[in-house]
Image (cartoon, rainbow, N blue to C red):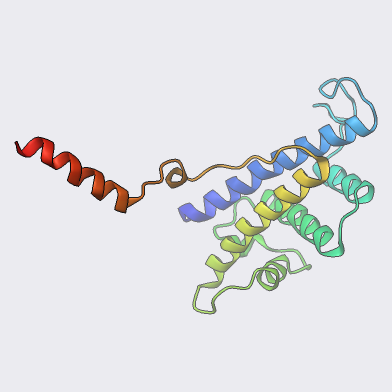
Length: 174
């Protein structure tokens, strides 16, 4: 199994944890539950609602467009497929449902025809993760977890840098 295939599965599971926790917090606040951790419905018990059930509750209680509902539903189904097919070697082999979630992803997120299908699916999965996380965050009014790119921390204007070095070079030439 390639590194990028393992990485996308891990990213999916991590984002599913974020989504599940955000939904649990949102629903418990709507139901005015005081302690989420000790709750039989949302806590860490054998009676607690499953990931699928929490997603379904959110879809029923929040006002999503048809496209957004489809994205969240496909996210749930892909998560389940990754869990069920964890021993499969490729991402394409994981998509075993009759719903053709891989085809839906490729329609939803079109890409260049020159990219291999496996890579297209991986790219589409990343886009789906981002959109679903944003949808859940906006709906529940909870902050979305975003990682800043390293290059955004340091922005240097090279034209002013060259002028500055030119000025300092006179100090060293004396």
